[in-house]
Image (cartoon, rainbow, N blue to C red; front, side, top):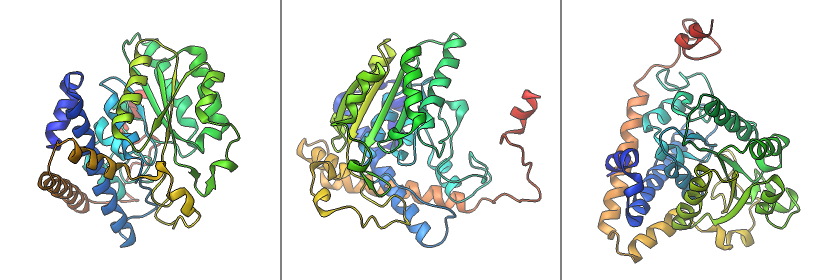
Length: 343
């Protein structure tokens, strides 16, 4: 089913009926949840070096970002955007190779597992200084404009914590000044690591900032997949049509710690009872049942299929070699051919 969804994404996405689009998005969400649960298990078993940061609770926002884009668009995902990465075309093998340190992965086993990307395919590698991703995306869009390309959009993801950085403000300002076709999807998961909203910003709603930047602003319920597909998809269409840069602010709750090293004990019981604290995967699954789009047996089969795909990708990556420090070509750019072409 997931292979079918991938082929449809590349060829006939604009012709997909709403319920089919919803099911396609749910499949990517389910695959992501299954993958990240497995990555957590591997991390706790000492098989992953570095941290593991999962997007539990944010899959609906993320998948809507990846599915709303098309070939030629630029995507700048962050650490909790595996669902969007997968929907945009990133293979499971690329993910598992990076987490397990394979030299055959996109980062060749050299960098942290969250920094992977394929810039030549318009998926930017994440910068740890998260606010910087907005201006990098703007730069990529301006480069495409200078080359005479047409009908492209850039989508940059950010959290509400990253929205408080100077780099974010600079990126939004230049995007509006240059009128590039940019969509910024900000996920307010109510904690910047352990810092709650009331210690991050004083405005009533983060979307209110859009008018100050010269952008158009929209809010979305980040637990509602249908709402995410509609609002984020609409923002992408408006940007592609030449409207000002778009800011979409999604409300949700991070349903795990900042990373697997963090027990999230600072999240209050009151926050956990808020409507935005719902699990978007469970909400989408219930909608599928309520609308008779699939029965319980089919949902179980989809889970088995997702688990099989994840296990296959992990098994393949585990058989591959890690970098050999004394034999590697440690150039600053990972592809030697690209280095040679710049000399």
